[in-house]
Amino acid sequence: MKNKSYSAAINVAKSAKQVFNAVSDVTKWWSKDFEGNSEKLNDEFIINHPGKHYSKQKLIEVIPDKKIVWLVTESQLTWIENNKEEWTNTKMIFEISGNENKTVLHFTHEGLSPEKECYAMCEKGWDIVIKDWLFHFISVGTPSAKMAEAAKIRNRHFEDTTTTSKKDFHKTITVSASAEEAMKKISQVNAWWKKDFSGSAEKLDNAFTVPFGAPSFVEFVVSEFSPGKKLAWKVTDCYLPWFKDKKEWNNTEVVFQLSQNNGKTKIDFTHMGLTPEVECYDVCEKGWNGHINTLEKFINEGKGLSE
Image 1 (cartoon, rainbow, N blue to C red):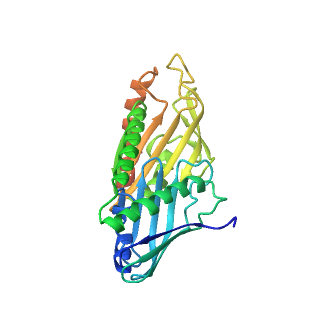
Image 2: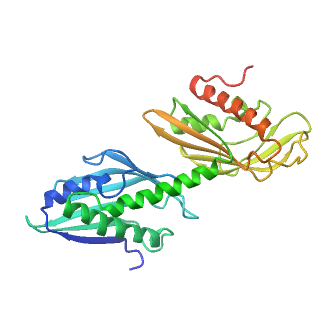
Image 3: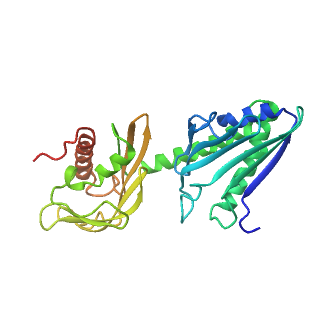
């Protein structure tokens, strides 16, 4: 029983075809934060609740009116502490059986078992999504009002979080490159920020130093590295002789969040802890604006710092 995957079943007074079609219409019962297609074999789609949940699904089995299987190829459950990719390589299986007027839909999230860190919350979530929202959509033909209300609460929370984070320096650029390629270019610090950079920024726990003319420097460690999605550098030490607090950057964090769409990648850059209240903010704001513009040019054109 320990390794038993989450499952749920619902009975509806609809035909198998109606149930099959409803399952395929994901935005009407799971989430409108949806991108892609979910109808045919090999279709792929993304569910993205910023700051909480990201998953990419691929349809690997489709038997009309009988069975649908989604393979989770990518995932980020940012609210759990350890393996944020717990959903990756799990499967969501919809099995349909019954007669013309009564159908049983059996749902299994294969791989989502009790020993997983996310299980307790995901179990509650799937109970709502399958037993309430999907059941309502199949039975009534319209999305559940509770689904819309949940989306409002989630979006309100995200807006509140975004508003709070705007206190930190933030800049957004869009580049003509894949997220993976953009992340590789970001890690080439000497090409867009400082030529005399030393160390490495290519892997988790790598350490590097950015000098600003002796005796000034900033030392970083790569504190988060999620390929194609997020990169974070934590300041472990610094010396900024121009300011009263010469350690003002200590324990701040430089964060790059990436999202790819239609061949382009949006990069949200935030210097967490660099707020208008700190002495260096005006100078550092101008500096980061220039450096991020150089990064944008480096990714788009391959031209970074001038020789």
